[in-house]
Image 1: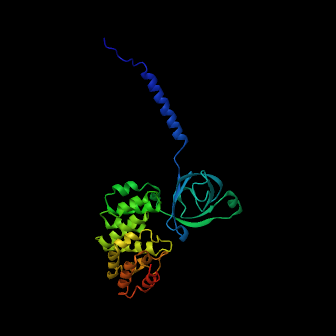
Image 2: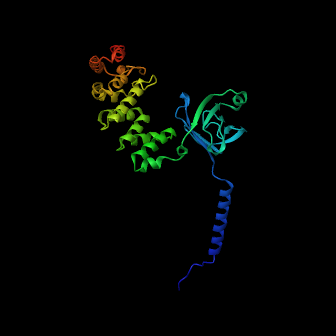
Image 3: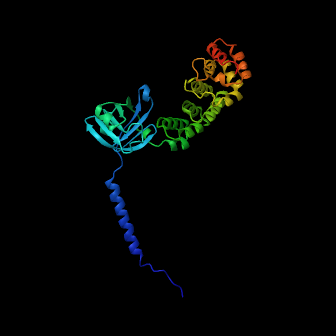
Length: 310
């Protein structure tokens, strides 16, 4: 004889499901989604390009994402907030001036405070101006970058990913540096940072081998900025430069990147020590021999000579 499982419990299961759905609906209705107050981009040197996304419940800026806050004070066109997690960002207290609901604010000021005591005393830690920008900057751009069918969509998405300071933006910049479109590669090389050895290898490859001349120029600019920064990498990745020294020096013969190539070796600025001092003595001698053939490399030669005979 066959035995069939009883279905008498089915109405109870249906009732439980209905109650669960009702509770979920009531909970959802009780906690409406955050209301966007505005998306702003920094317009002063100290906060240039930094993006702030403000809702009535959360704030996102730089590496701080969707941090919840509570209001300390609010007046017409100004709100002072305290982050729920006090150590989530450098400054747990913030005042946003000239911000109004409904996304109507065109310009705002952001003052940050290290403590509630500093806030009460009016001792701001920093102050920056921001201008209202496209609200699309508040949205997740990674699907557009990964699946965008046109170069314009991928380039725009990658630019916004960097402005949002996403934690994994370097992964997307490395992908962008290999994109079939020069338009996307230009954006990627403008922002590319991260692990020195990998970054320098990518930039040297694009400087030497990219089919698009504008991309080759952008890669050289990034290398010049990288090694021309006073707080540059020093000798951390000099082995890569040594392996590609002649490829780098060949840029001196290209009128569009010649002076930028000289900047890589310290013509207008350098780290400490200059890149030339990270080379072996024979390599440095070769570098100086090549640099002496040009009229725009005097400072780079002087820095190479200052390294001594080490």
